[in-house]
Length: 367
Image (cartoon, rainbow, N blue to C red; front, side):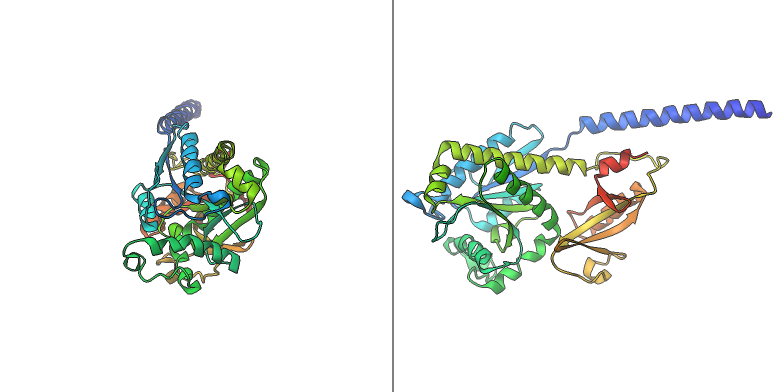
């Protein structure tokens, strides 16, 4: 073959390769669009039945207000065909705390959101959202203690909760371990909801907090507990008990969940097939996030179920733990599968460009 013929052949081969590669990406795009992910959200209306929860101004009951808001949140979410809503209760019935978690786990839910009302012996007001964690102060512990005391109304609670004492700070410490790997996502959702309470509803923002809630401990997915407001505060109680107030709270919570799922979608690439020949910018590094929490853990393999090469990064007051570290997306997907097999079922892929975190979707589009 002479040089001229070689160039013609080589050019034609390249053209065919580009065409095939383009066709593959079009096919991938169509397949991804056709297989829209459905997110399952479990909504939990606090208390119920013979457990009224907190009783506030004019005998307003937490269980009634929480249920009305929860049902309305579900109605808002169900407008989105990509969201499946499951309720722990839809009527005025009593549901054991551990059963609420079981409902979410059985559904393999993506989110668990528990809705409550607050109370205090002062004129306190405002909204706050909790994730599972050690009580940072007495106030947080008292809130968790009040919610956890529900287990004393349950049959065989000592057997179901293995001797857990809702009045004991020591008992609370053991609750945080299972949820630790979901803490980062739980904090993300809680922050979004709190921000919306402040900006959209103009409620006093009492912040995102950590405390030892039994109902959150029994879930195996990102979970939050919302204290919408204080039914012991006259103004807030009347607002929470009104149809308008309940509707606005519900809409805001639903919008917060929707925003969280949208952000999650930007980092979800499970349905995208990557062709090995496609090169990713060498400045982009993919990692698998295993866990996040306030605890500083030695990055020894025995602390991470045998996984080696763990990286610990401090972000604010929290430590994030990463596994892997590669510019090859196929490789990091294998790392994620390995982490999941080891027990990190919520392990997810994150991307960094020149050290700055970016969405995985954006990273894969980078030439």
